[in-house]
Length: 363
Image 1 (cartoon, rainbow, N blue to C red):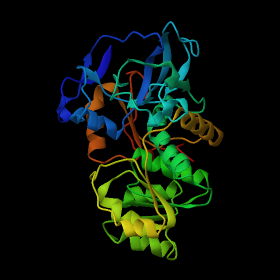
Image 2 (cartoon, rainbow, N blue to C red):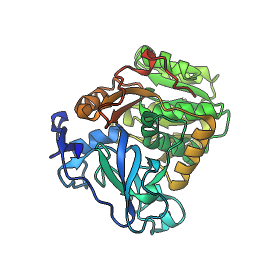
Image 3 (cartoon, one colour):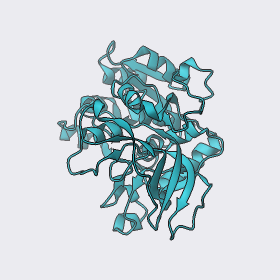
Image 4 (cartoon, helix red, strand yellow):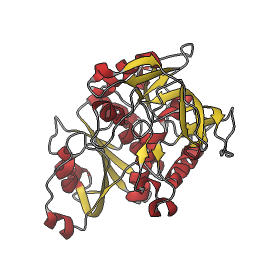
């Protein structure tokens, strides 16, 4: 089968599309005929190499996918060949204390498809049967592939960790990335007041089209914390959703209200920051980390998305053969929304951004 793989860790030129053996299902697995798979920043870190994770080469990249069940393992009774499904990328042991209480993303052995197991940038992929759910019928295959990792991460950050209350104010850094856009969509579903930041006026304009109430360009207005205070009449926001890391740490403390919640899920601008402990406790600030989501988070996300017919924002759709070019676009930060690979070379393809199309991608 054709797959986008790496044979060693390194730079972008490590990514190649090659023929590798198709997987067979373990007793508790299904093999998908992958129709579409979406990129995430995790793919960059996997390609470059992550301490403590040894890959078996050739290693297919990719975590998100939608497709059709082609084969099932002997112990699988929840799905059958021919079912259209979407994949939850989170892997857990299902036996530790955290899994038993339903917190799979806190599992002692937590992993992610494409990092801890072969990925989805392939014509076929083997995944645990517990990780697949019926594809929401209203979504295209590209939209379904773009939904899981980013929206599940944003759902857990906003709903499970920050415990968002409808109408609250939310600051989201770096609008344009998958998790940031997902957080914007989810916050607006709950009638939140959303402030977003970016260095791109084009991305800020498009964020306003998606419902952002206020936008801040941190290049032309570097005092982001003060700008947030001004927009909130000195109060500060209820929640900060941060996918970026160290560079926004101080901004978060300058932007949050007393008793507010700051949730982190990424370190693209650095992993270490200094904290003013006095400001932390005096202002009753809650700072939380979050990774992916539980099986219940995924179920709730799919239910809420289906009820609202929420559609992920698609940046571009490319054939599997162009996996390297797709990853290069993401690595340069050029995208607005999710970049999706499709395996069917005959399927209609688009390299246009969402803003250049008629764009049915709506809240």
